[in-house]
Structure formats: C-alpha cells, structure tokens
Image 1 (cartoon, rainbow, N blue to C red):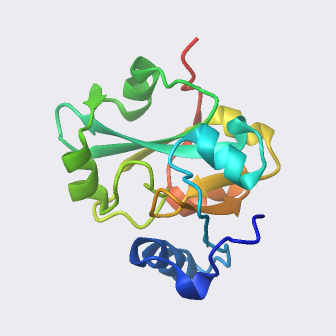
Image 2 (image 1 turned 30 degrees about the horizontal axis):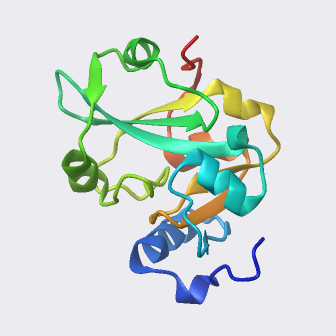
Length: 167
C-alpha cells in the first residue's frame, strides 16, 4: 500500500459511510483512501498494486419495467453483457445515468460500493471474481477501496455468482 494512503479515522464522509456499513454487518474490512484516483479499474489496480481483474467494479443499471437499480459487481477486466444480466434478474435492464446512480445509491459513479446503498438493488455477481483469493471494491469515493475475498460478496452485497462477461 502507498505510504500516503488515508487512515480510517481521516476518511471522507462517503468512505466513512461505507466503513460504518461494513461494521454494521460485523465485518472488519478496512476502507483505504489513496491520493491517486481509483475511479476506474485500471487506476485502482495501479494504486493498489494488483491485477485489473481483481478489481470488483460496481456497475449500476436500471431495470426497465420496475425502475429498480441493478448492481452488477464485475471483474475489472470484464465488459458486462447486459443480456446476461437481464436474464439473471428476470427483467430487461438499461444504462443508468449519473443522477439515477447518486439518487438510488447515495454514491457517485466511480465510488459505488457493493453495500450501503440508499435503496436495496437487485444484485448480480460476476463468477470470474471467484478465481481470486482477494479482490478490491470501491468504498464510496473515487479514491477509496477495501479488500475482501470473493466468498464475502454474497453476504456483503446479496446476489449470486453468474456468468456476466461479454464474449
């Protein structure tokens, strides 16, 4: 880790909310903020010093019929096949704009964590994340992340592992 990363006591408010959500679930994962951006999978991997595929990126879509948010936690190396996600949630999905993401999750694009959303989303987990011992997820800001194992995701975020990678 970077010697310049921020300690939990000095986290920005959105990252503090994620740390509190983790604690509320009885998890002792540590949110870490970096001076460099972790907004994209490539930026996060570079800041952390891990493979891009180990970044658990949180993508928000909009369910077309119900209007519910759909959270896809995907490997940073994968493009998501929206038809596969639609099949997994039983409803067609579409892209969500920045306003929808912030309104429904409470977080800005680039910092959406796998938990602590204002509205509980439908959740789909990328099965490719299971190939790693440890992964890194966004933690509320474009500079904050936390480390976990893929096996922690279903209890943390909900959902189940399915194939979502675009071929």
